[in-house]
Amino acid sequence: MFGKNNSGPAAEKYSVATQLAVGGVTGWCAGYLFQKVGKLAASAVGGGFFLLQIAHHTGYIKIDWKRVEQDVNKAKKQLKLSSDKPPKEVTSKLNEVSLFLKSNPTPLFI
Image 1: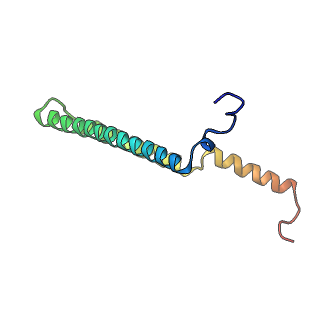
Image 2: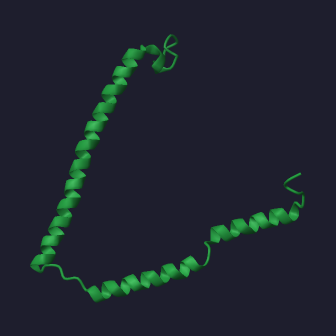
Image 3: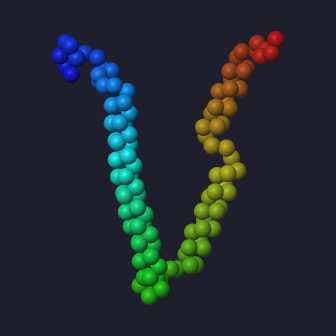
């Protein structure tokens, strides 16, 4: 690969059929691996939720619904306050555009 005769890209050294075969096998192996890992991750998350549900029903976990309601109401207030005014990025870009338009009075449509 590093000699004088082998200075070209590796893809040029193999036929199209070989490249397709290697790519197909590699893709199949990657898909198979991600399928197995995905199933394992989904099973772990689902099993975790299942165990939490069982723990709640058997009394190991108690939920303070008043506190949950207070936190939700607090989050609602914060969202409402932040949604009334545009983000800093928008106002700074708006100021940039207005400054540009003021400094360049050339009409846009001729």
